[in-house]
Length: 252
Image (tube, rainbow, N blue to C red):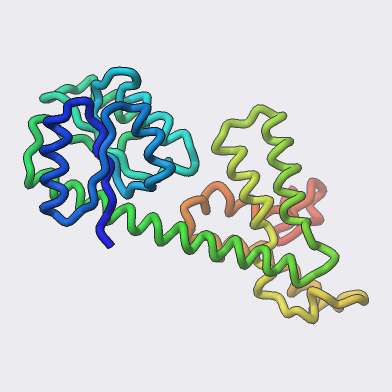
């Protein structure tokens, strides 16, 4: 299936040129004549990449890019901004709002082809990571479902933790990390025998030692993920205690 590319430019001549190039390269082009139209199209069409003109009426390219990058649902769509000749100020502002790449008008076709291939390759890798992360979330919920005592625990803890983080006025990235940490903190229990997890009587020392491995196992499971540096420490240390009697490291 060919990649779907959204072309956003108020100049119909430039839109037509880009559409012809994209069709020759076997991409599927869709077009928008202004920023508002683009923002309406994105959730409906789910483009793989966006070619976005900087200077447009109604809503310029910077505002469009910022809205896309501020939205978790669209933040990972690559945005290539189309700028004027050697326009350093436009490039600086584009970087600030999260643009992934820049092309200078008039656009050189060979350079456009190369940049599209590069950005779409990155998008495919990102999509693969998203699928892997979805599997990990499903595993976390599967672990929870194995124990009737903890049913709903992950989602409740995640929700309460998120509300506390917001009340503490943490920034968006920190709130997100805490929410994900709440959902995934027990993912390491996937490596623990069901008989131990569901044992109705007191655990033996050996069984308890096995249980205490789950924070380290959880941190190892999420290590390849993009959010590992923020969420990994939450998973690893969620059983530590202020008095040093927690695990796995007995931190104070």
